[in-house]
Image (tube, rainbow, N blue to C red; front, side, top):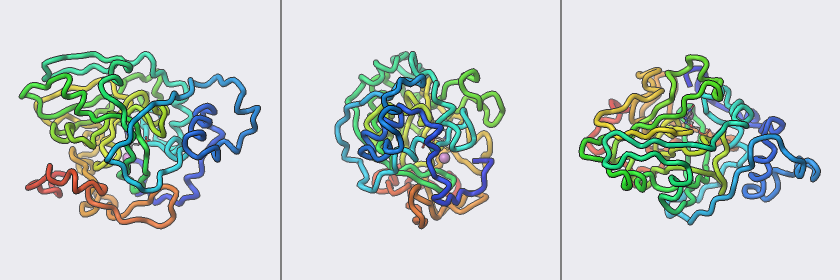
Amino acid sequence: MLIKKPADIPSSEITPKSVYMNRRQFITGATVAAGGALAAAYTVSELTEPSTAAEANTKLSAVKSKYDTDEKQTPYKDITNYNNFYEFSTDKYGPAELARNFRTNPWQVKVGGAVGQKKTYDLDSLMKLATLEDRIYRLRCVEGWSMVIPWVGFPFSNLINQVQPTSKAKYVMFTTLWDPGQFPGQRAQVLDWPYTEGLRMDEAMHPLTLLTFGLYGETLPNQDGAPVRIVVPWKYGFKSIKSIVKIDFVGSEPPTAWNKATPNEYGFYSNVNPNVDHPRWSQATERRIGEFLKRKTLMFNGYGDQVASMYNGMDLKKYY
Ligand SMILES: Nc1nc2c(c(=O)[nH]1)N[C@H]1C(S)=C(S)[C@@H](COP(=O)(O)O)O[C@H]1N2
Ligand SMILES: [Mo]
């Protein structure tokens, strides 16, 4: 985000680099996403050939959610080939290949800070906290593009309720794995690693805030933040932190990776707001990946009816 100018991405730039893709992810994506259209580029023998790459994503069963948008969903190939994941690369086409062998098992998430019940979850125990739901959300990147992504997860509030935060807990801080052996991006000081993010308690409790394990009905592809990330659809994409290993309930606004890097560009709140420009570009419009014409960006990314009341009385130019 620091490196590139306002993204005004012609759809020609979004051409999937399928040659770089994990073949199995490609196949599983094709079966659920595009009814085989994506797989058409491969012959049958290629499809059945044993793969040395990471394990195929597994199916997740989820119930339908009332929070879904009915907009056209962004193709799986774009969601999994055009990524922001600076731990792997600052190039959006980089993570798909570089994340291929990322180890997501075993995985632990340590939950601590101001809680009655400190807990370390493995992925299975975390996923058992609630029934998974399908959540079709818009994701608006601060760089000016957006996607519609069918996530699978459950409200983060389910976890909050289990660990019982004390009255000292005012914010939640999330931390991504630190592992320069696996994350080539962490060998350079692109950001102050590990990536951290935060939400105010009411934002974290909001039913739209999703603890996310999958997309398109399967476990998250590594490049999309496996094995567990958060998705906060009314905020710019960088709030939706990937590959989380630590969740802390804290008393004051936690440091966040992009705010530390350039505080005048990225605030703590980072609610999608067409009326507040980024210092170097406008936030009034966005390009939906796969579309040619730009759209007007909606306040709170279109989730205003559900979230605006949390910010009543706040000057959103000051708390950007
Ligand atoms: N740990 C971590 N989380 C991250 C990022 C990152 O670089 N590292 N990029 C963010 C940004 S800027 C965006 S737009 C979204 C992109 O998610 P996607 O690649 O699954 O579409 O992830 C967010 N979460
Ligand atoms: Mo982003």
